[in-house]
Image (cartoon, rainbow, N blue to C red; front, side):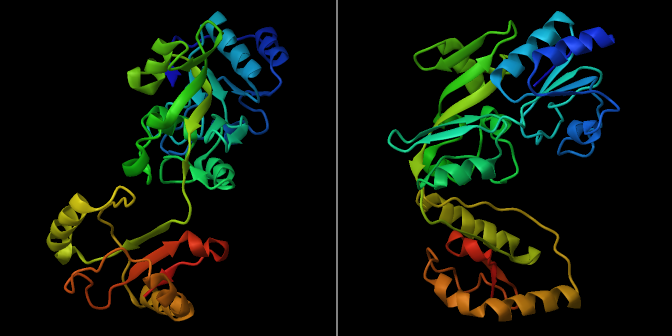
Length: 316
């Protein structure tokens, strides 16, 4: 989220006012750690905020929101920093950095989890999977949960359990006037509607409560085919996807892969090393592929969480 206003020059006394209100760190240009803290995932975004408030709790967020409002500062909110257009940063304003807020508590009996919005997908999944539970949350473990969820949240479990936002049952939000509100189906319903797709700039979400589902062993992988097979593959995929169960999610895309002896040798070495595992995973295939589909000398790649401790990728 980024709220644009006119850049305002701050004096030292005003900056120290914010520092005194916060438990977390406040960074300015020239401070140790500022250059790293201002960076976001998209390297094309190169903005220099006047202040970065590295919040560690809700009180810090309230202090930063109030300070930005009182001094009419441009305000940007950063969760995981993965936003493509760079909305998690700004020039000459104040960035509320939530990356230090990583509290999470799973309630296995209710199958719910309350998670602070500095968490990333991998950190979230690690906790919920301790209880054999999960919810829809993106496809890249380094993505922040907050921006992904509030933007809808497509993930591998969406066909069975809906988008990430469909599984949100409550949110804690610091509004522009510095109040902390809980939004849910029974409390502040209009705000709950807003944070679930009604637009942007309703406030700073500091935690989200999700509905969880039983999710155990997962098989995942990829099949690669040459460009000349694209028409046949896509026609087959369309028919296959129309009747596939909700438990199965498939994606398609075009990639440019390197050619040459060096790559071929690496693939050959991997196939030789992991040959014993191929037979073990063959039983997990969900349906036979047409005999014409796997082209000669191409490589099927399968990765299963069953072998996650060894981080094994299989090539055959």
